[in-house]
Length: 362
Ligand SMILES: Nc1nc2c(ncn2[C@@H]2O[C@H](COP(=O)(O)OP(=O)(O)OP(=O)(O)O)[C@@H](O)[C@H]2O)c(=O)[nH]1
Ligand SMILES: [Mg+2]
Ligand SMILES: [Zn+2]
Image (tube, rainbow, N blue to C red; front, side, top):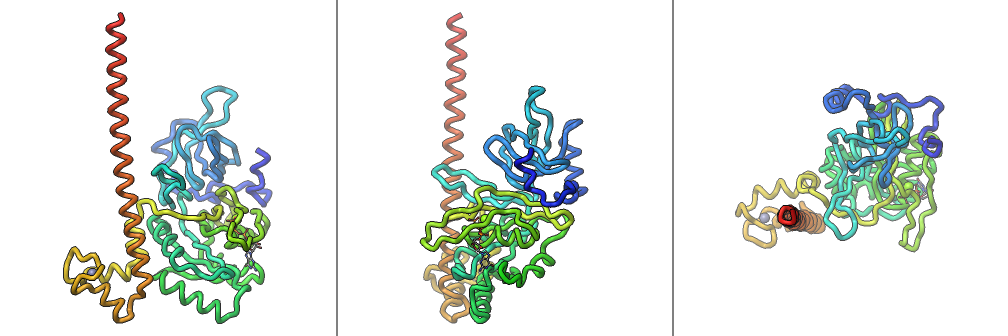
């Protein structure tokens, strides 16, 4: 227990409401939980075990169900008297930020569950990366949470540079709030807190390593809850934060800090891409051909917009790229589903034939 007590920097343990519990969760829990089980929220998930919040702060085994940081789970006693309590079930997620799991297999990774606001964090010391922001926004919109963009380290730039960066971001983040903050001089922090922190609400911070996510968590919490690290200049970025972790600010909501992600591949993000590129998609209906691919067909409204300067060419290229990526993923998912189906059939055949052999042996 003691190693997880650092999650709380106030002496009073958080209440269920502090952790995000509400009537809707209560109703779902009541419908699914066996008598005597507890509701708890996953603050940190490790292989096979997780730390959960509320009613206390306890270490439980995850059981067979994969759990993600931010999940609401049903906890019951372990199978043997001395066993740790065990996650029996995961309550259906209200939102989930999901990317493709890095590595070779085609699988999803739930980065954050039941999040209300996704803060897409970008450091002004490295300049804004519009393409990366679009990618995060696609996944954020897809997640069901509301994205906002936070440009950190405003103290590293002149006011003109800050204004220019905000302008650049606004042009690719339509309808999304853009905040500029500095953990060094404190600017923008209160405004960000007022806009997004309140009891029971969950705010996830996502962005590259060294962009200042943990520093911002500490600023918002008013205490050093997360370790922070020097930014390396050689581009080899060592990750300071290595676990995703939910931090409770009693009465003021929850922050979900994450390790910087080097690459972030789309996972089921078609709708999120459409929402991120609402400006491009609005033009599509105007193309002469309903199956226009916007690659040079006559009467293409998208290319006409590039021509007259109302759509930036690099943004169109970015849209094409993310569309292709979403389609390629769907194809790989289809391949994988077909392989799994094949494997299931072979296993069934093998089992049936073993059964037959046994009967023959008798
Ligand atoms: N000047 C300045 N430096 C900052 C600011 N915010 C963070 N930093 C510095 O940036 C470096 C990285 O900050 P972290 O908060 O550890 O970055 P992170 O996004 O959590 O990184 P990972 O945990 O690796 O993903 C540290 O040296 C911080 O002191 C800021 O507003 N201004
Ligand atoms: Mg960090
Ligand atoms: Zn077209």
